Length: 285
Image (cartoon, rainbow, N blue to C red; front, side, top):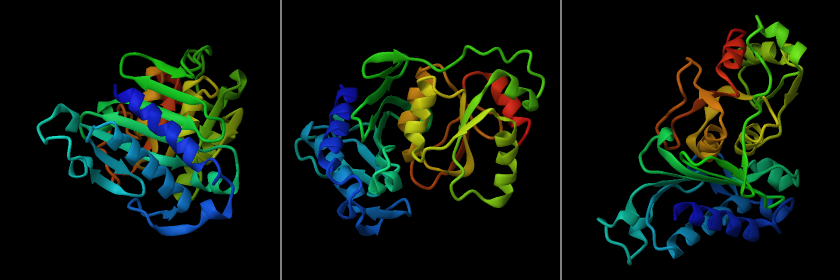
């Protein structure tokens, strides 16, 4: 079962890199990753743990990784044939999401792994996000719900937004919104500032996948990232976890969020507990 392999892979990442968290060794620069960011030792060790686990389970998907780029494991698995069902599908991997937190010892970083049967975000069928500091596991399979350590979770949807006429009124119902503002362009910062101004509470922790899992668990009413910087590797797993927990994910044009997989496509998105909240937030930007 592919979900079991993703869980096994994430646990192996946890075991391999736990002694590198917050260390200069883990932070050492190795190369420029396929995604364009600097690859640290902790990133490389984590990705190898995933790749080795997948190979050992005798499946040969195409792996899309933040550091390694696109790797067809069928080229490495001599026990598989190209027409075997095991060779189908894609594993989307961000073995360490929140690398800056991880190398500085800030306890908010995760391993994000997803499986898709087609080359698009909406085709993700299984997902795992493992908290690298606690070992806690978020998981989901399509149409089967989302779970935190095997207990079902759902988004926070207890507030009634129907009577809220404008974004300014959100403060009256104590809304908490997460957002990522790292390296945000000035013209986008102006848009986000309106949301920040009218929200009761704002949170930004530094690892998108884990933050989306917090949203899925009901800790936030919404999580938005409109910088146009997020890759499918950053959010493929949390995308499914958020949706299976009852969340709604939209693109900037108000359509249901979808994208091709890969490292070149960059996304903006709104994850909300209900459509009315999306309309209120979008009205300000």
